[in-house]
Every structure is written in structure tokens, then in C-alpha cells.
Length: 336
Figure 1 (cartoon, helix red, strand yellow):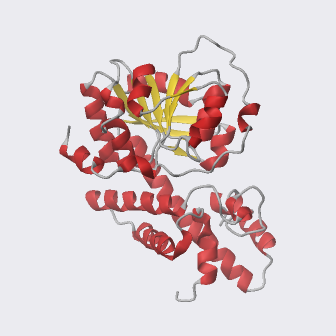
Figure 2 (cartoon, one colour):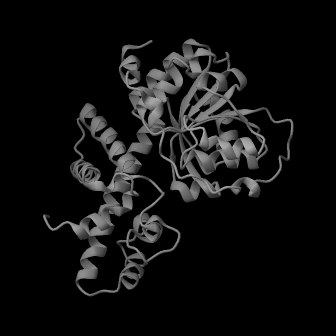
Figure 3 (cartoon, helix red, strand yellow):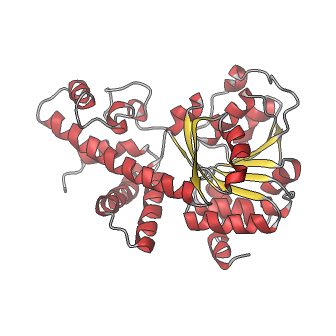
């Protein structure tokens, strides 16, 4: 195994698969029955905030699941619905030749693939392994090399769209890997997303996702600052949001995921910033962007500043809140 993989896997990664909201009991009742009983099982590892609804959408499209999560409670509703739960990633690989992983960090991904009970311990030749985690592109490339040695295929396919898009099956997948295998990956990813885009060789999917999330972090901070300033100048927040969204300042952070409580329904800011995409994970993704910028000698002045802001938020009690809580952070901070 490559030295870099041993380094990333040295931490006890699996216990950190905690990017999750516990689903309501009985929520799988809405999952329709399988229309094509002959479809072969798909392995799914990582049933957090994003993985849970992604797996449900595969079920809705008729795919039996072989599932694993480090937290047994995350698997219970799937087991109750008749899906097969196993005790390790290796067991998933033994029973399924198409596997999707959705994990929080590079360490978790390396542990799931290359750990003592990882996928590569029992992977079958010809298997298709799709990693939808957002991790370091260099780690994706190393994993692909290890998978290739076992006669299997690895593709990176991180997602954009958030929990809402995961639930509705409208995610965007950015896929990197051997182009000849893209159609096979697209068959599965199309059950969970409305956009499945081939980006190039392994690692390019991660590159696209890192750039997207850096821009998202910057635009969310900008939206929060503009909303905060407008409110302090006496503007009604709903009126200000309406004006922004019909003007040149409009962006996803303002019109779809507004960070100000009371402006929009169905977003984390309307629920005390619970759920959604955690501040810790945004800080992690910005760290990946910073590392990539350093290695390519690319200036990311605003990206670096955004990284520092989200790291400060984590240090001040916002780590488990959605990243749009930067609005609340700005409201409470007077040191800027």
C-alpha cells in the first residue's frame, strides 16, 4: 500500500462518520416497492445526512442494498425495510460488485477502502467502486491505484446540492475516472441526481467539488455580511432578500439557502441552523482548497480568508451548526 495511504489511514477514521441527522422513525414508509426485482444489489457505505437520502433514492429505483455504517442505529430503518445490513466495508464488497461510499473525510475514505476490514480486503475483480465523499484529489488518485491492483475500478463522484437535493434526487455529481466506465456509474448516480457530469481522470471530480465549495463558502459569507449590514441599516430582511434576488447580487446563498432566520422556510436558518452542511465540513473542504492552492501555486485570497472564518467559527461553538450560521456568527462578533 502506498505510504500516503498508510499515513492517512493511521487515525482511527471510522468513528468520525458522524455527518448525520437521525431520520424519523418510519420514514422509509414512503419508499416505493421495487419495480425491477432482478436488479443486482448495490453496496452503500455511509448513511449520514447525505448518504441516508441517497440510499433511499436507490431503493426507490428498485435496487436492493447491502449497507454498512459505523453507527448501527443509522442502518436500522433500512434493515426494517428489508435491506441487508453487514458488519464491515469488507462484507459489503463480498456481497456487492457495485459500491457507493459517502464519507466525511479523507481519513474515513482510506479506512473504508484500505483499513483492516476495508473494501479492498474482499473486493471482487471487475467491481465498480464510486466514492461520493469530498476528499483530497491526491487521496482519490492513490485509492484508484490500490483498487486497480485488485482488478476493480474506482471513480470519484462528489456531490453538490445539499440535503434537500439529496432527498429530492436532484444532486449534481462530478465524476472522475476512466471514461469507458462512466456509463455504468451514470446508471446508478442518475437515480440520485439530476446532473451527472464527467470531468476527466480520477481526481477531477474532487477538483471540481473543491472549487465549487470554495465559491459557496465565499458567497455565503458575502450574503451574510450584506444581510447583516442591511438589517442594521433598518431594512426588513425579507425585503432585502427579495431585492438581492432580483438584482445583480443574487446567488444560491441568497435565493435558495438564505442564512437569515425567518427569511425562508425549509432551510437550516429556519431551524436554528440544524441539519444541512456542517461548519466543520465546510472548514475541512476549505482546507482541501487551501492545500490544492498551495500545491498548484494558485492565489486564493478570499478562499483563504473564508477558511480562517470557518475555522474561527468551529473554535467558537459553531462546529455542529450548518455553515450558513456564519450570519449568526457575524451578528455576535464585534471584533471585526
